[in-house]
Image (tube, rainbow, N blue to C red; front, side):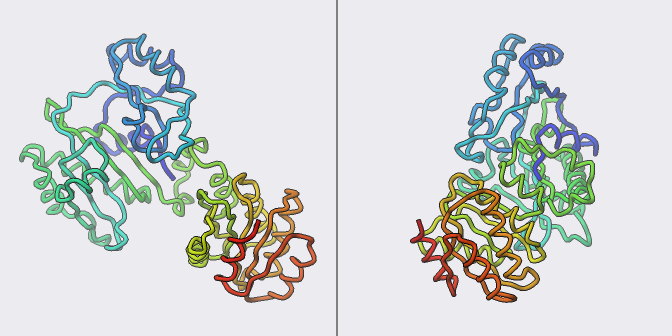
Length: 384
């Protein structure tokens, strides 16, 4: 789950990391009033779940109340399109109006999970203020990492070493190391998958300040964090993905036109790969799970059928805990509820497979059965 910048900064501040003074607003008039409170000049920052806001026009420097109201009017209620948002963009429903900062240096600091290492890693770079992907491409040697052993935690020598690699003077090493330690505490306390400060600035009066913040919390841990659950902004999420999440269905919206229903994440990935190799373009990743009943399968298929770009549906079910007949009843139920007539290619194996096929064959739906995944992928590519 992604948090807005203002939400992430509130958490950082709660732990003792210095942030600029900022005011959240949702109308142009509030933006003008906030700018006045901050001395008549401020930065307006669109609060969206997408990076690249600056280049997309989502961050504005204003020098008067009137300018703040004018710029807020152009941002609020619009969709901001960035390189991370997709062509549809994401809605701007609020702005963070923030005081101007006296920036002497810009650094990059982040914590994330390194799958190769199998644990958290602290990342730093003296090249802050720009996308880390650009830094990695143009100057990879300027990115420094410190893998953290979960049992030991972040060690003092690691923060000192990273501070030195960032080129910080001795008097700044201690406050920078404190920020690193606090970030790791926030990361572990809140079950984060990412915390990013870009930039972490050194001000003219030699303070270390988090000028921006990005924070993502692992979805599977949210049952432990009722307070964080309240920070979810559904307006920033893909509508179908949000609906699936509410039904405890693993779903990711993709750009193709072949709706895919699969039980099991590994099988779902294999299905997408084989379908793509056959020339079909998957519209989604969907793992309905092993313990689904007919109603949950129906809801999953209903989500697929409600996607306007889907023109045909591919089902790949290995019957185990989820029996094939249960899956078949759910599929038929979803088609009946929606009134859809989209062609359906089905590959079923496992428990009650013959019963499942019989249910689908007697349903009146346009069903094509396949015996192998390759056959199913080829059939869906030809279906229309």
